[in-house]
Image (cartoon, rainbow, N blue to C red):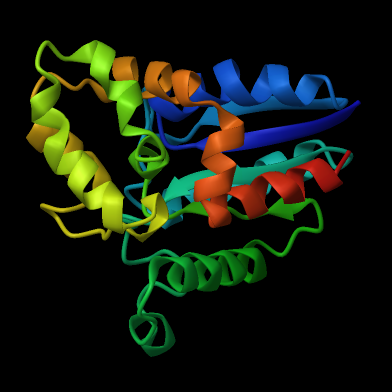
Length: 216
């Protein structure tokens, strides 16, 4: 059985990994273990500074050389000290897929460990939930509030929804469902949607999972 450590941003991603990815990949002989990043003593969650995250990635890579280490970080709101984030080449990229791939390459180069597989979500975890807006219906008394989500999904693939402060996937969901709670609703909606449909509509996410499968 191959071991894979996933360094994730918070409890939502931790639950997503435990509830969807862990049982799915256990059948393939891949043992996944999510680990929430530490941002300060006694506090976990959020990539607020790459300087605080880098030692954690490096430590995981070195402490178990027979295992692999990957990440599940949101492209949206990555800190300015993240490898490549401040470069002119990054700013010249027009789409989220290109930006995420560029930062993944820069991150891999900076960590420089053979057992490290970088991954940056386009643009954030909530983009995966736009795969199927119908999965939100059981969490609202009036399905009409979901119309703004249906409208954007009708013309835009989940990973192509932009990363503006008011138009990022999570901001759009909160605008339609004020009671949306990321750590509670997010993993449950994701479970209802399922990995197969997510992979069909989210190519960057699919490529990451394909890379994990090759480790087995």
